[in-house]
Length: 146
Image (cartoon, rainbow, N blue to C red):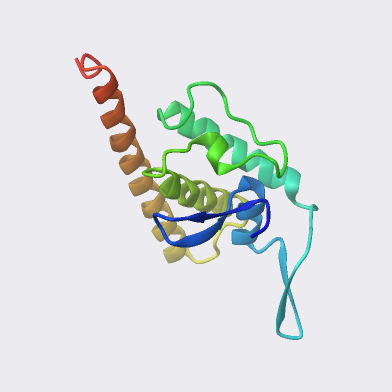
């Protein structure tokens, strides 16, 4: 495995830990097809636009109470999902949420039914992440909900 990959034992898959790289891969920015063969390449043409969206989504997560209490900023390929949280009970959903949200901002779907499905999925993720993070706050401070 490369340095920016890790084996998630809980999920049983190899995952790219670099936030920027995994989002670029999901958005199809770092992958090209030549004669039917998938070739990866280091395309940095869209990095600034993607990073702008990534950091806006992380700010939204912070305002929802998800992740570290201090601002989390991704500047390049070196920032990892583990830097944001090492809590594997929520990290897969955070990865999915951030990726889906950035993808919908960077390359919005042209189909209104797909846009609505993405919107509903994001709303469900926000609700579930909020519930999960509130649960931990109550466990840490029983007076939190009072």
